Amino acid sequence: MTAQVIDGNALSRQLRAEVAQRAAALTSRGHQPGLAVILVGEDPASAVYVRNKVKACEDSGVRSVFEKYDASLTEAALLERIAALNADPTIHGILVQMPLPKHIDPHKVIEAIATTKDVDGYSVLSAGELMAGLEGFRPCTPYGCMKLIESTGVSLKGKHAVVIGRSNTVGKPMALLLLQANATVTICHSGTPDLGYHTRQADVVVAAVGRRNTLTGDMVKPGAIVIDVGINRNDEGKLCGDVDYASVSPVASHITPVPGGVGPMTITMLLVNTLEAAERVAGQA
Image (cartoon, rainbow, N blue to C red; front, side, top):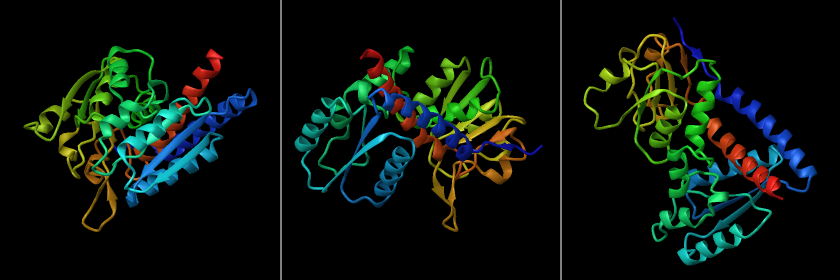
């Protein structure tokens, strides 16, 4: 058996085309979706991420407002700017790119964003809404992972899913989304002894621990779906995930590659969340 590759690029293009169609319909009614992206400092990776997000907005009919500030920007000034964007009816989503300079508290910044505009889904209230099963914004990477699993056509009902990772941005919300889909979920992490004992029982494995070769072929149940969230570098400097692709792909039924799997979906789900925020406002109007 050789695993079927779950093409994140192809699914992303499909979803972005749907976003563009819905955004055009909203715009024709005077409600163009708007996303504000704030970058503080000169982090090179952050600059690339922000550029990709802004371009994705432009390509999908979502208005983007990009604001770049020097690393010396004060916390108070950033919070004041977020408050102004909260009050701007043309802005439906606000994203502050992380990491921030050390003198700015990221928790304060995230909590300053209005919940109705928290399209990253990172705030405490957004996390609570997810846990309670209420309507809210799902964090973009786990949301994208769910779409990738959904694209296989395999129902999660009654399946055993193992999530490797416990971060607030991926591992924990991923587990909650899998639970909502009626999977039985086990959360593992870097401190779990005998990780393979758990993963060999899993119908679905989501690897999101940030360490290459965390999951190898001998740790995978034949026919399992494997979603690789990791972004690492191998000895040659090439991008790779948390999964040893060469040994896992002959065992799994479906697998995401790195790059070209989860990565493209993260920005796509940011667009989806921004669109949904705008649709809620338009519906209220």
